[in-house]
Amino acid sequence: MKVRQDAWSHEDDLLLAETVLRYIREGGTQLAAFDEVGDKLNRTSAACGFRWNAEVRNNYEQAIAIAKKQRKERKRALEKLNKETKPTQVESVKKEIQVEETPVPFVPVYTEEVSAELIPSTSTNSITLDDCITFLSSLRSNDLLSNQLEMENNRLRRENESLKQQTKELEKKLDKLTEQQTIIQEDYQALVQIMDRARRLVMFEDAEDRNSPAFRMDKNGNLEQLAK
Image 1 (tube, rainbow, N blue to C red):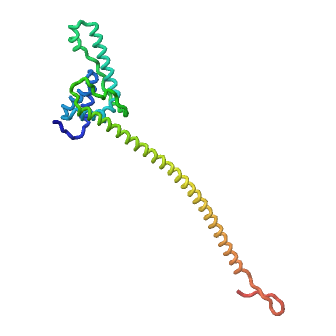
Image 2 (cartoon, one colour; image 1 turned 135 degrees about the horizontal axis):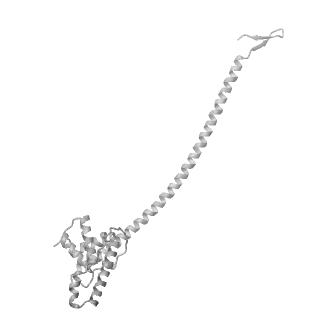
Image 3 (cartoon, helix red, strand yellow; image 1 turned 90 degrees about the vertical axis):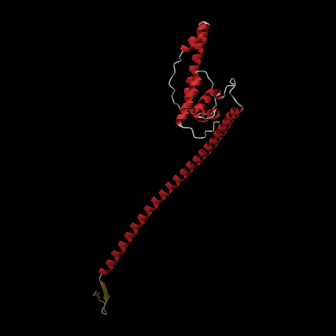
């Protein structure tokens, strides 16, 4: 029984992607691809399917489209052979048909849509009830996770807008305080200048008073200067 619980490595994801894309190109089912990968990695088919749907598939949207196009080209070529070639020669010619494979580009495209290609085909007898339950559970988990991420994104967006508004208000207050500080500084400088002029004026008047001669009138009515 497969009970592997360790995390998926980059090499495991790459093997899963290459196998699924190969099955798509060759007209096979994704469930069969999950079975093959599960045998190689000692994992269950359901675990491989969940990993593909939840993490890996979103990174290979363009590669999946190319693989589907190659599958259609292969199918059209085989149909053409069935019409033009004798039945006894069809099988031998099929083996010689090689559809040109386009290199698979790694193009991350993140989407919340689930393609119908992800639903295992019911034409195979290898589908079990556990596989169906696991697959549906994975879809439900993806929906719940998507809703949680959307709610968190909306909350962060509102919080960001609130912080922007607070920043604008603080900038206005800072500008106002800076203006007030400039006015106070100018008033202080003017006051210092006034006080300095007043101090000089008082010192000048004291000096004049000390230098001015003092007089008094004698008994004969004459003014005489007093000695300092």
